[in-house]
Image 1: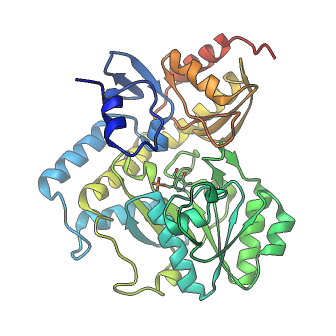
Image 2: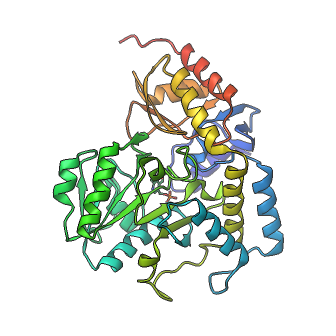
Image 3: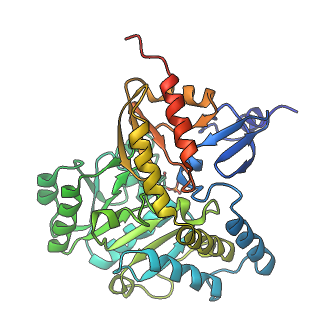
Length: 387
Ligand SMILES: Cc1ncc(COP(=O)(O)O)c(C=O)c1O
């Protein structure tokens, strides 16, 4: 039998460039491949594997829930869904008191945008240059440069982009005609660029003074990755709506939109909906992920590992480090893809980004000191560029 890569390539739409290995198992922060390699995973399946792999509490929760009640839709209330909502609200900024469960980051943003239009009755949306919000119609419309692959014949609503970190432009562009501004506190796909504090504070103040809603897309930065449960908590602001996905289920697909009681009051039965969102297995995974982060002190671990990476990893090709927590961009003196490939040749998996010089670290929150030391030692082995 030919390997998984050639079988997939033959039968699926060829939109993904596969990395040159096939995982068969994973444990902790390690991926074990079909050829027997053990690869240190600092990419976590695109920021999903918050608890790494095979985490006992998560595995047990998924197994138990699958046996007890694999699925029921939102036509019925479930204790486990209520518990997931309680857990999620317990870690969110104080004003966010209501949850709507969905299946992915794009779906969370799609609903957040719709909620902003419905709540304000306005017709225009603002986003930030370099931002990424997903590939569905509305989420892609607020994604910077999505015209390269958008695919739909027209945008569903008016969109304009505030230049990243430009406070004056933000003040000029946010007006009474704008339903909401959507932003990532730390722009992940852009290369883990953390927005300036001034800019985020300006977004908050200007939206508040015009009755415009502020939507924080924490699909990549949320659920502990920043060293706080949500990156907005580092900036000390409360958004009106917050979206979450990726690490939320630790690997079980799920997402959520959080908002205030006031915004939730604009919606009644039938106004939003999904078949799978808030399903019992996803809800059990959400509870297990949040409980584990709390019980195992993982926020503190993220902050320690971030400091260690900042101290040890500006070596070899790395010129500086941007981002927060374990959403970091190693800014390199050469193409990121060369550094990513060198590290992978040494059994360390990292990612690239839209910035051709930035290698992205999206490691599990359980990352250990020895893993960072290994990353630093391996980076130091990379020969200098000849240019
Ligand atoms: C900030 C952000 N928002 C939204 C998305 C889209 O999430 P999904 O791929 O689950 O639809 C992503 C995915 O990378 C993301 O990084």
